[in-house]
Length: 292
Image (tube, rainbow, N blue to C red):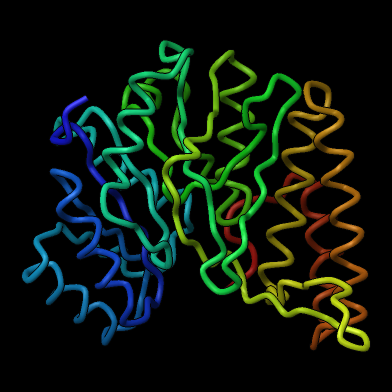
C-alpha cells in the first residue's frame, strides 16, 4: 500500500491547544488530512482555521455537535469523494508517533486474512497512566470490538457494510461497527507493533490505605445516558450472536453504577440519567435526545 492512498480524519469538539501538535504529527504520514469540527466555540474554530493554513489540512465545520457517528461519516465520505482508498480515523486527543501510519499499512498488507480485514487498530497506551488499555478479544483470537481512534479501514468497506450508525449519536459507535463487521464475516484485528497514546476518560483512582481499589471514569450524567442507552440498543440487535460479550457488558454496567454511587460526584443525577438511558434503549428512542 502506498502512503498516498491514506486519508486521516480527525474529529474535534472544543479541542485544547495540543490538538495542533497531534495534527502536525499526523500530517507528514498521510497524503490527505481532514478535520471535522463538531460545533466547537468560535475561538477554537479560529485556531483550527489558522492550523489548516499553517499545517496544511482541510477543515469541515459542522456548526453544531452532530455526534461522533455523523462526523466520522462526513469525513469518510469526503475521503471517498476525493479518491482515497484507505481512511485512518483519530480522536483529537490521540498522540500519533512517527511512522505510525506506515506500520499500520504494512501490517494490513501482510495480514493472514488480508482479504477479510475490514478494521485494523493499534495497541493503545493510556497517555496519563502509561499503562496498556486491554483489548477485548473474541474466541478466535481476533478482536471482539475496538476503539475508532487510530483505526485503519479500506474505504470500500463502507459501500459494502454501510456507514457508522448515526442514531447512536455518541458512545458505542465504534463497537457497533465492529460487531456489524464481524457478523458479516469480516475481521477486526490489532497491530501490536503500532502504539497509540490515548486518553479515553477522566479516570480517578480510588484507594484505601494506599492500595488501589478501582478506577472510575467520571463521565457526565449526559454521557452516562448515551452509554447505557446505546448498550441496550446494541444488545437488542446483537445479543443472540454475541451473548457472552453482552453478559460481560451488562456486568460492567452494574459495576459502573456501583462506582458512581461510591466515588463520583453528582451521584443522583447520574443514576437517573443511566436509568433514562436504559428506558430509551428498550423503547428504541434514539438520536440526539439529551443535550450535551
